[in-house]
Amino acid sequence: MNSIIRLTAAETAARIASGELTAIEVTEAHLARIEAVDEKVHAFLHVDREGALAQARAVDAKRAAGEKLGPLAGVPLALKDIFTTDGIPTTVGSKILEGWIPPYDATLTKKLKAADVVILGKTNMDEFAMGSSTENSAYGPTGNPWDLTRVPGGSGGGSSAALASYQAPLAIGTDTGGSIRQPAALTGTVGVKPTYGGVSRYGMVAFSSSLDQGGPCARTVLDAALLHEVIGGHDPLDSTSIDAPVPPVVEAARNGSVAGMRVGVVKQFRGEGYQAGVVQRFDESVALLKELGAEIVELDCPSFDLALSAYYLIAPSECSSNLARFDAMRYGLRVGDDGTRSAEEVTAITRDAGFGDEVKRRIMLGTYALSSGYYDAYYGSAQKVRTLITRDFEKAFERVDVIVSPTTPTTAFAIGERADDPMAMYLADLCTIPTNLAGNAAMSLPCGLAPEDGLPVGLQIIAPAMKDDRLYKVGAAVEAAFVERWGHPLLEEAPSL
Image (cartoon, rainbow, N blue to C red):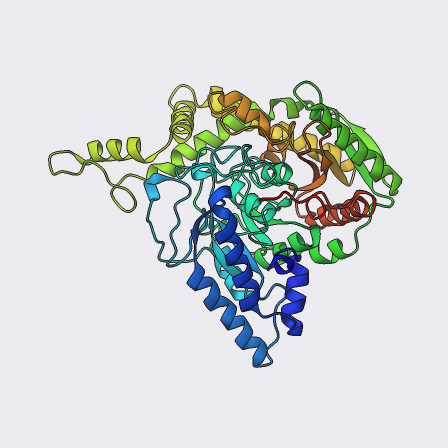
């Protein structure tokens, strides 16, 4: 079992296609791993054992019949519990949807099934994707496999923890302000936020519609590219979906190089609040890029300093609108309906019982920002700042091909350390938020361990919209150089559970 679960997704798919392994063997190995370690990690909210085995049997039957298999056929995957899955619970980490079983699949779910990817189950997350630590889940926190007393990041900590603990070789996350990249950084894995509109949002429970974006999570850059190619592409069911081909991400991942590329370093992405070990590993990464043939360009993007403030007006405003649908009348939790109360009273009681503190905080903040008399002062001003950030990116990309930065200012913090300090929690997304506001593509990949605590550090790569392939081209080159010199921080120094 140990040898199977430590294979990359690309290696696993190749061995299934050649007959060296069966999809059933691979699936059973990962289900056994989940059974062995997930009680400690708590990466999964729901494991679909029978469904996963049925999918695996179908892959083996296809191969036996001589049918051509896709590049990820038979490879297991952990799916963030924000995508609807026909017949399997979707809770979004909230009590208000506890036990809800959707009647349909999200477009992303359909694409995974069509590609014969084996969905193991649904992963833990901050409630409605609101958080940076997965502590806001109504079903309890997830532990970081590097140190179970620390957070795995958020909101997609369950997906990243499943990868880092070898419970799955692939996972899906969503990124509204960094919720794919930040967990990837804290767990030593790879996470990609595609260009906004590059992956369908149909069937993804909405938090902030102009920011939310699903994307691939993996342990290697090539694995992330293979998954990106499966889930990307135009969807007529999603009005924000880009009607254009998926960029050549797999080709880029197989031909990584930074020779002759101009790589930008933004001065706003360092300074007070950044952990010394994170800065050290980032500086080493920049030096490595230069060694590999890149030209390093210093950039000044002053509006980035306003990104956190703008985000925490735009995202709560959109969430207060999106979450209005959870009213106890149509689906989900209903509390207090004893025949004596009005519909309004039942709705209020249900929301009080069903939403957690962080969700309530953001709904109230967003409703206030959108209220009469405050709209222009708050939400309108935040949208103007968003335009300034987009323009700063546009100016930057006239001078460089990609931008690099630390993914997070610090390594993984202790569970409970920031629970009573929302501002400290929000600062975890300092480097990732500008990309969501502009809609660009971005990746986090491991760039070593911080010397002071031995925990993973992430390198963020940012590319212009619809130039997602640049992420993989640079990421693959950096990954290969790191593995050659120091070994892969996860594959070589994997945490023990």
